[in-house]
Image 1: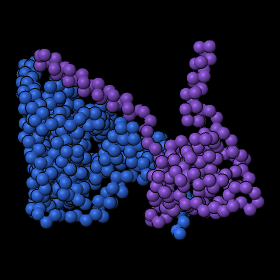
Image 2: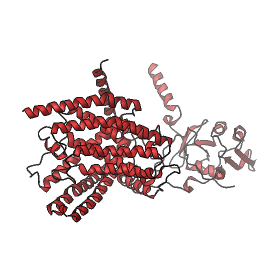
Image 3: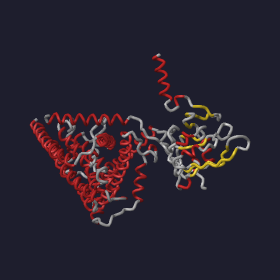
Image 4: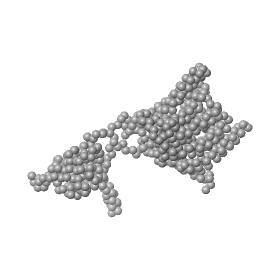
Length: 190
Length: 394
């Protein structure tokens, strides 16, 4: 390759770079304004755990101790007593030590009634590790504040503005969009 | 048991001061930049136009007292101009690099973050000016001064309009070569004196870069001098009526462009302060105002080297005058405006190149300078001499 061809190649490469850079000036920034604008994180990603109560204010939890049994870090502590009005148990205490929790969400998978769920809430950094101990009131509060949550048994559920709990539409379910597309393709094929 | 705080009870709630970056206001940004440019123009008019004209008109320069007053006033004005230039260029650079990298850049202080530099300067003023135990104290303290003074002295030589200049130097080209080389001395001494391996490496690289780019730069300037037949900036600019020097002296222009980027220590040639390789190079151990002076000098040079380029190759203050008398004050205002606009365009192109190209290696820079730029600048000198000969014959 002659010297002039080499120089011409270099000039062309620099010009292409300059053109690319100038095109990127006009593109909108990809910046997240996080502390001022909280991003909506899908609840399917395990960010935080919450206890869900029914619409009438009773616990969904039936105190079956499945989550306590399955928890690999053994951070869940449940105390229960016999239900005086009928069969089953009622919760007396539900403690969750987030300092040792590894956010594996095995408790969510094990829960037979979808009482403990994953939510998109994530801002729970504290200055003292001793503050990272959640009790039932705290988990209930998170559950009340949550607009949308996920459990493998019921899928993504959401709370309407009137306070009713409904199942989210299929496009918000994990893999729901893919299933919709599959049905559409199958319909076309058949 | 201590209770886990709810999100609403957190100790630190994020809050915005003033401008809301989530709702950008581009018009406010443009007004702010227009105000910046007007401030720069006012400073240039004051420093280069009003004060020298008044002093020359009343003949105060002939008495020693008048000359001393002129020197003091001009020094203060030039320092203010340098500060304004640095404040503007730093925020422009950061916003431009942010846009290129699809970020927002500074955004909190002032509309769209245009007052960020003011707060940065206040922060640097408040910091301790620390010197490690092993430094060579005198040279360590002198180096930022040398760097800044060399950039500062270059401002004397610039004419912004006919008759608007601080000192009318007969050897302006020689002066800028000499003084800008002095700045490289400051960089080398600052790197060597701090007893730090990164500083030492930065100083080595600065020295190697200095001897590499200064020779082609000086020859490119010489070719302009040969073609114009004078080393005075005013004569060079007057010589460009009809045809800007960039057309006949294109080779010298290319050499000047590349070499001045090397002199700026901007990104394709930012070897002395390569942040990703040697921590900050020659200014690793500097903090507080010493560091600020290095920074100030860098951005003053970012304004001055495109300024010299405009003077030498792009007709300086030439532009349509709409029938004004070229020596009147109104024409001076207009011509200094043309000069500043040309400089602003070239500053933008410098920033554009800086945002585009990756860093050269040491040996590649010297390869380019000695095997590429030096022969090119000699050819440019030859071309300039030939054109000059034709001009003389015709």
